[in-house]
Length: 399
Image 1: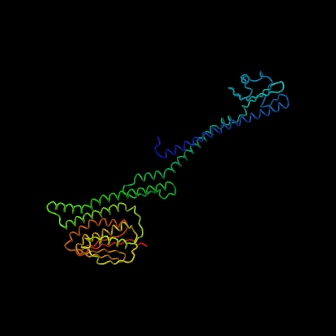
Image 2: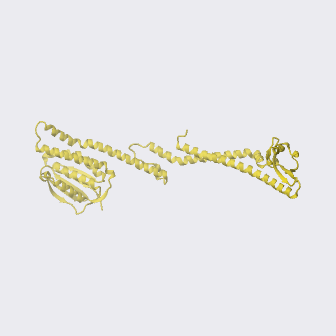
């Protein structure tokens, strides 16, 4: 049973080749015998025309004319007795007769030709039949060899592609040798490589999403759980309520970032004005009543336009998180400075030394911010000390 596509193709080509050989051999035999009979029949017609024109029986080396049925050989008389006046008569003694009846005025003439000595096809097969069979078998063998070679050559790229797909690792890049071919196999290899890469990218994003959900949400949830546990013994004060609200806001921002990163490879990059995103984020933050009490914009040093290359949605999430962290970890009376120099956006907030322990909790979100920047091929760095916290963002230049 054929299970390989190469075997199936070879069987199809070989079967078609043998069928053509047998069909053309049979057709050649039929044409040979029909041609031979047609020549003999034409000779009888010419002899009959000669006898009819001369009104007398003739005789030749090939064709004999008989006025009486009794003069004919016995096998021919049986043929005539059966009502057949013309035809081809075979005998067991080697004679091969062709009979034609000619009706003349007042009499009937029987033209009989013993064509055994001039049969060409049968004698040809007797003499060179073995050679012809050998040649035919040789041609069939050559045809089968060509069919095998064609099947091997045509199917080999598909078999190589199948082996490469079979041995492709889960984390290895999809690179197929047939990708450079300028035919359907090359197109198939390119599409397979693209599909594998997309699938592996989706699996990586799913794994990262699961890991980040477990890692990034654990800290705010732990803080909120501890705060709520204390509420069972005494009412929550304003500071604890503020921490709960900040924790909820932190979870909401983290979830937004995680979903954005999960869709990052499906979001196109474009050139846009980063200054507009910065101003929108600042206005959103400073419009908050609590922000007015705890955060003061000390410096805003930006050029009129900041064309960058990236994704506006991801950039907005990045700025919202950086500014939101400055608001949350800066403490009461914190100063915020936003400046641009040398292609780097710096976001600096002063830190109350008494809140240094709280500020360290911000590090749990740095991985997300690195991933947001990495999705746009931006660079982001964090610098922390006891008096200030600085975030440097280096975006790709736009136009």
